[in-house]
Image 1 (spheres, rainbow, N blue to C red):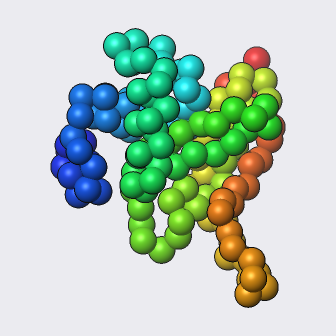
Image 2 (image 1 turned 135 degrees about the vertical axis):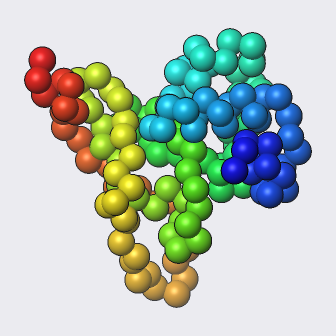
Length: 135
């Protein structure tokens, strides 16, 4: 599905900034930090980027995961309807800092007491990526 169609299907207004940012995230195929996105979308200011990312996360077109350094990274995904958006583990390379989605490693469902509500779940695996392992 084309980017503008995905935005419309998610009840988001189609804007140049939303198209540009979602296209960047889909092309990359792995979680990206704000600074990485800004480097590729130099025509978009920081405030617009934050607002667009928030709207894409709220619309379940993008998920976010926090690294051990506190940096949020964003990744486009298809919502499969069975799990929460981004309901998979992530791998963070401790050498190069790249983060990878491990889409085949689903986060388990947790049974919580009735008064508890989940706002966010993540599983983050740390180590060396293939490229860094061989250098």
